[in-house]
Length: 151
Image (cartoon, rainbow, N blue to C red; front, side, top):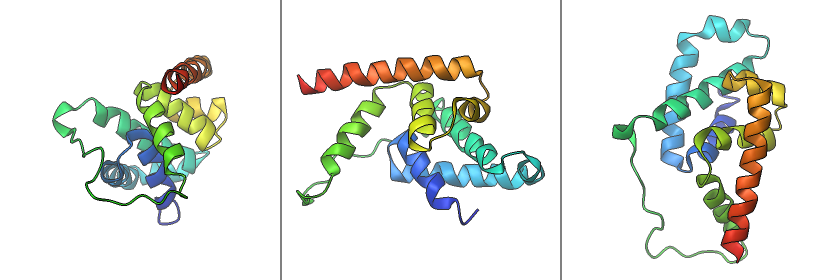
């Protein structure tokens, strides 16, 4: 688990767009992995099994309105290094926030973690056709939203 912690944290951040929430999601996922360790260890792909748990934790936590805390969009008086690629990350984060949770999860698993459609379907426990349609719709939504942001 220690070897995968940072990867899970980045994955959780990409889904929820908040580092504190990402840490909470990883903690919940680790507890679930621990409880189901026999199943995780016996899985054909334990890493994908753990990613499935993390993704499903995020999806289920989004359904709980009492758990949603929103952090401030910008911290006051914080300098920004102009050479940093923060603008690119912020615009990508804004585009990802416009997607629904399942489309966002599919795109992150497919393109950030480079999982195949079959692996993504296994992680999300959906059909490959659902992954393909969510990918196509998510990419189209990103294109539309990007054009709207630019012009």
